[in-house]
Image 1: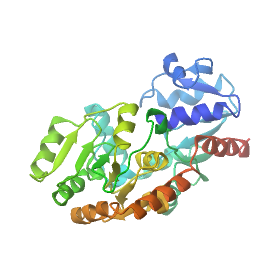
Image 2: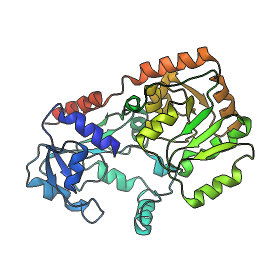
Image 3: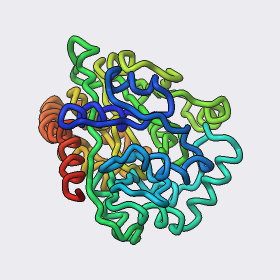
Length: 338
């Protein structure tokens, strides 16, 4: 994932690191010359033996960007990560998993017990936001100390020469999956009141999900399904007189919002705690259950003074989220348990 690779590259600049990979090509995402050890592909069958496999390398600390890492018999310190609690609220498993894996995923999230068992096997638990940290504490998801190692935006400005903003931004951009909790339906329904604007749905969408969206899309709505784009293509659409939008009902962080703010693109998002943490005064917020409210908030950015102030606020706020800062937070956590 981008979280794994960007955090890894930043940490490598601060301290020697040996990476655990299941394919040597994964090392190329970080540094072709980086030190690494080879481990099996993570599956429910291979995970329980991970600690015993790692013991022979005598690590001081193992950091896993996932919550699953077999800890039985370990002779080293262990930091596990869990990014959110989405699947306790919305239990539909990711569609890219096999039927057996989806069944296991569903059963895993029926109660907190399996994840508590996993997280309590570590010395420290890391997560990506203070909002998620509070959720963990509220539900007593772990007895271990919880530290925040935030996500950070990639630099999309390297793909564009300038960001165009006119009196009334005409493009509305959504980047993310089409899982039910992402609530893309509100964006589509809200286009009823935005006939002169175009909604760009950037990610891949299944035929089944597309058919469901077609049934609720207003007749006068302009919607473009890009069905997957490169980072460069994504940046160019964002930079073309656009607003980034999300009606998500729950997130662990909200990386597309951070990326838009860093690029200097206005943001209209759900009024939920995590988006206030990520965007602060850089976004306009709306009721994610009210499509008309979404459309109304979009139009607020037609006023240049409003747009300019939010762009300024957003850039200033998101500048504190960097991979270097996250890597330093991780390194300080590693030092604290040695």
